[in-house]
Image (cartoon, rainbow, N blue to C red; front, top):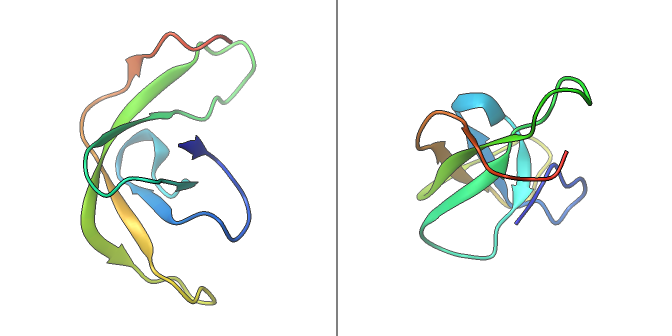
Length: 83
């Protein structure tokens, strides 16, 4: 999964938590995903949040297909990504 991807290939939206509103692309139907939390500054440590894939779909004006709803599963954690 690639967070913060722009363009028509985004098929999912994060709901709730630190990535609320972030558009991304997912290739699986079920499970929990780890999404990197956008940093506010380059000095901020990289953290991530877990999001659960749901059957819920969210329509957005101007988009032909609805987005897959990813619901926040827990508080942010250190995910060991390089800064």
